[in-house]
Amino acid sequence: MRITAEMHNAMTDGTRTGDRISKSDALAAQFVPSTAELTVRPEELDDPIGDAAHSPAPGLTHRYPDRAILHITKTCDVYCRFCFRRETVGETGPLPASDLDQALDYIARTPALREIILTGGDPLTLSPRRLRDVLKRLDGIAHLDMVRFHTRVPVVAPERITPDLADTLGALRLTPWIVLHTNHSAELTEAARGALARLVDAGVPVISQTVLLRGINDDAPTLAALFAALSALRVKPYYLHHCDLARGTSHFRTTINEGRALMYALQGRVSGHCLPRYVLDIPGGHGKVPVNADYFTEVAPGKWQVRDWNDQIHDYLDPER
Image (cartoon, rainbow, N blue to C red):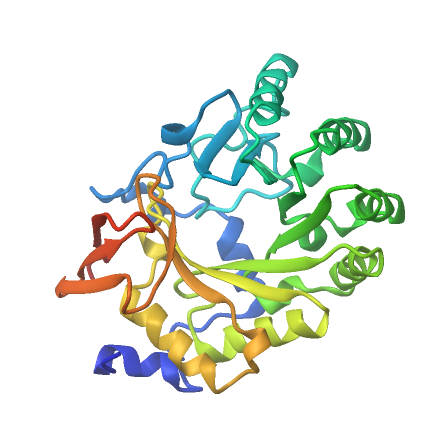
């Protein structure tokens, strides 16, 4: 990777000191609306990761052969301003019973599926009764091996992670995986640390995903602090997502080169087990790819060609600076 003057800032402790904000502001900036959201760029999309393009049944996305997403609810405890589902999340609550029946019927008659990813929305906002019902029905589908929960609950509503919930997840036939969405070490309060400990102590593996956000966590010290803290809590940093092309989110996005430079800087700053994989969800529903030389070719400044897992080529544009 060629290190340019643009990229050098991401590799120093003094990164972007003029733009660095306090921990409380780093939290608020993720959730408080901004007039910057009124700027919608031509490449931004209502459905940037293509959920609808791969939906064989209501509430279901089947993009990869062996796993599918079940959008079990459209409710979250917090609403992230950069969310790639910001056009749909919050519109309704739990998936209607008839839609859930159709989704579960598709899962039951698709033996290639091994893993179901519960998301939406945040699956851990469901009532204990409703969540137990869905898990019981998934647990009864013999060809499934795993169920994954994409959630912010342990850091934004840690009181929901009760010992009873942790024990319920740990007792499933299916192997449960919690994927915690957290973007800054300030989110890891004492209550959040307790919630994560309850899950891990119950035998539930926890990994994390983080969105790279301009002005919030786009410097090596901030990311290193987050990833090291997670590892100390027995949470494996899993993905660092390049911010998706949701409408009105360009002020949150870094460039590809800035993100690559951050990963370069982190390589020697933290242990290998603290490092996530930096990925881009190719706009339009073509799946995630690691942001590295094997997948990305810069054909002009800020203009990239990205190869997906099916060896197809797609265009990608950085935000203008």
